[in-house]
Length: 102
Image (tube, rainbow, N blue to C red; front, side, top):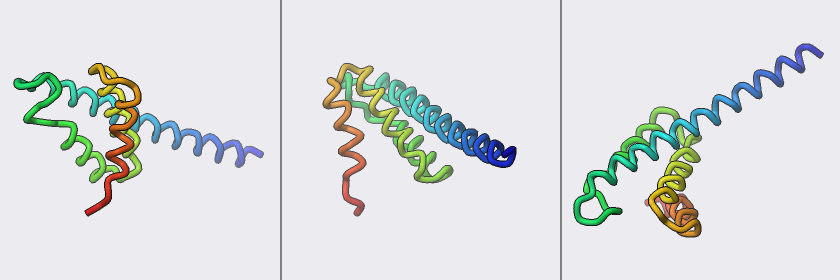
């Protein structure tokens, strides 16, 4: 009985760590997007430099593809906070995830 409880505790802890990593990546991605949008000079939503791309790519290369929900969540939050409608903000990560691999 104690072994079952220990295994459940370890599994719960690993899920909590995974969710924390996703949340941290989403926040960092969102903050980098806000920084990139501050560099926009022609239009408010277009920037010549986009730091989230590098952060997302580095996170996936270092920690593995399992953290892709953090990038999608960061994109969703960033889109909503910049004034995009919910259907558009929801469609952006969905479309990016469905792009065919070349």
